[in-house]
Length: 221
Image (cartoon, rainbow, N blue to C red; front, side):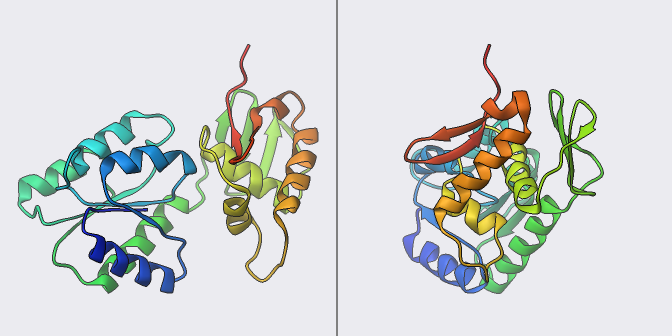
């Protein structure tokens, strides 16, 4: 998601990001960004000087929220002093690019940040007794392996590693299924139903949000 009050610049960035193969959209204020973060984004391209809430303040709020604290941020800003850059990185930015910039450079930096943030690690992602390991593509409950298909594993990985974020069926199709495979949104529902059966007591954590999609939520009670 691009967050910048300069609409012409947003249009240029969106055109080039989409041409590079990314799903991209824009909002024109920090306040709008807060309202749409529930959709779940892989990366924010964030301006600093905007009417209302600044990009620095937005970054601070996102990093304080458990649901968005791991979302990578690249600042794109005219604030180019050393103090500005240090402030950006102190707020948890993954990169800091000053205006004017080359769109090719921004695209390259986006690729680099996404590559780092999505690279599998040896550390499992754990929720209570449920664990998934991206390095060897396995899932366990209380230490016992779960027999998941590739699709079921990828669905669980996306939802568990973005706990609390809601993904539309279309977003899950784009993340999990190969681009050359033609499937419908109903396919997501079928695979979620199969995954729930294998998660035993954690099935209730796969929450369906009517009109929105699916999320992994902490069990209540």
